[in-house]
Length: 277
Image 1 (spheres, rainbow, N blue to C red):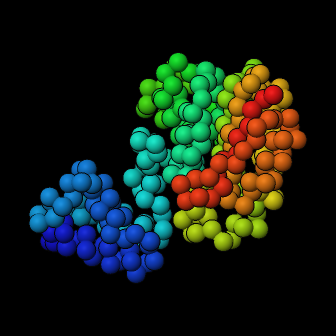
Image 2 (image 1 turned 60 degrees about the horizontal axis):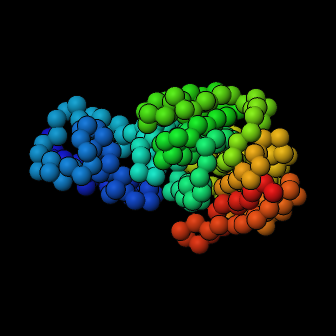
């Protein structure tokens, strides 16, 4: 029987050999999950022997991480804008760069928000949690994603203000919104082969690529804005770092004013925003 510290050191070496980017962090998170404790307490149990059931759970988790199953899928959640969101292989993992969209959305007031491609619900749920008076609609073509988003809406206490439904973009959407947001699939089909195994093999392809040039979703969004964006309403869409000019042109062509490209914390183009004239 090994101590928790020894098991974590062995696991770290195994993950490093498997090419995992941050093996020590992942080993610590997975040991905490196996032991059902908070990750900050792992150092406290390091001198203690692992019980057989914890050791077995830890071994299974490390074996899966070694073949690049994402940590979020193994523990079933991912942090986003100060909250923990339940995730699965049916939805795109919430990512820190998407917080750029959240900050931009919260910079001005809104009462009624539409999230196109709701996925895990991290964007819609966060916006409703931060704006207690707001209501919102989240749509996704994936029924599994809608179920995941609904669960996260319940988890964070906004389910009464969130309508989540299956829709192919605007197909099942009615009414107008003073804020429309989206983090759509924007990776070109030709770029898919260059993604990491973790992303390409374990996240839903439909949430990653439009199967074309990566701009298909923005064309669909731009085409539907006229009937659903309230007077003076805002649109914010996340983009890939090379797509700013193209997406800006689409929103300008759709009649939006004040169209800007906003950078993320790494200085890369990340969000295009505009407003109804």
